[in-house]
Amino acid sequence: MIESRHNTHSVKVGNITMGGGSPVVVQSMTDTDTADINRTVDQIKLLTDAGSEIVRVTVNTEEAAAAVPKIYEILQKQGYNTPIVGDFHYNGHMLLEKYQGCAETLAKYRINPGNVGFGNKKDDRFNSMIDVAIRHNKPVRIGVNWGSLDKELATRLMDENSKAERPKSSEEILHEALVLSSLTSANAAVARGLGEDKIVISCKVSRVQDLVSVYNMLAQRCNYALHLGLTEAGMGSKGIVASSIAMGILLQNGIGDTIRTSLTPEPGASRDKEVIVSQQILQAIGVRNFTPEVTSCPGCGRTTSTFFRELTDDVDGFLRKKMSEWAVSYKGVEQMKVAVMGCIVNGPGESKHANIGISLPGTGETPSAPVFMDGEKVTTLHGEGISQQFKDMIEQYVHRTYTRHEDVITSGQ
Ligand code: SF4
Image (cartoon, rainbow, N blue to C red; front, side):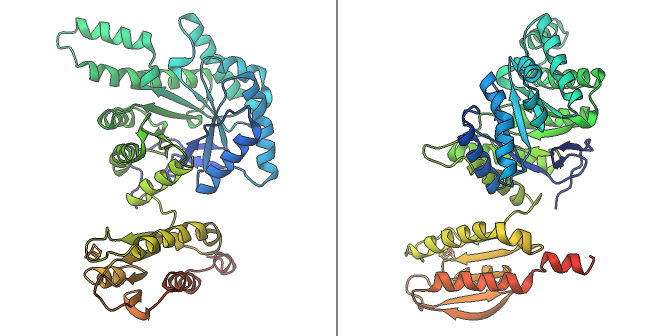
């Protein structure tokens, strides 16, 4: 496992702790109208069930602010304790002051210093939100965004740079403006009385190299907990690849306490995809394990049947579904490795390296599928029911191999 090398403050967000060496937290955001209570409740449940440990909602209107305590209450009654974070822009000072129930039930407030206000009003509004956070003992995220960067600050830095003996590139100045905007706001919040352990910082940009530069600067210059994410990452594979690379580089260097993958959902796609991608990023890089991993080959001309793809998909879905039950019962099951391979070329070898693996018959091979457990061949499956038989074997393997949580508690370990 990669450990955090950036020594950040530990921040409590509801029942979740981030920073200070705690496991990197997965979070997500709803795209429902927060004032639509039922749809927002349903989406928070969807995101939570997928593994989101914190869910953010937009609080952009009085109706949305009024809905927050009701959403919280319904979720609590249904056993969902996921911390809800409120995303505020422009009118956050007014909403947080006026809707005390909203201020109290939210677990954290996200404040964008670039969207608080302009001129003299900016400081007053920012201070007003920080005062509410202090009063309710809540953490805040100072969330700076490339698209809404504090224009006065950026202009000042550009002007100063133009007069410098060796001017920096405009890119460097923008990186500096992002970092300075977040740190100035965070330090102002601390000066106002908010604890350093009540602050999380993010500086989101939409390009990989910019994100890496900006977060390296942040890690060198502060100990605030850091929220990672590429903003406007895009749709489909483009968004997934860019987010994975950007966050992967930073996580590899021990930078980042919580992540969100900001994917544009594909038409008809479920909102929880961003949660699954975040988990997969953390799991792929070895930061956290969430669900047993399926190793499968890409397939080639040696396996022409669609059965191989269907079995891989079936096993993957089975593991994900069973994990909600296994996670509470079996310690360490999320580290299990399962292999589903297309033919004899790499099938037996890869299956032997997994906890449990199956090697399907390729075109022209004997129609049988050897199954391996912990490196040993245990049986050969044939015929129509291979998929169900293999899933049954995985289930039995889990029962046999992983210690039940209640046994760990009973033995006092
Ligand atoms: S294991 Fe077999 S089917 Fe899969 S990619 Fe390799 S050669 Fe092709």
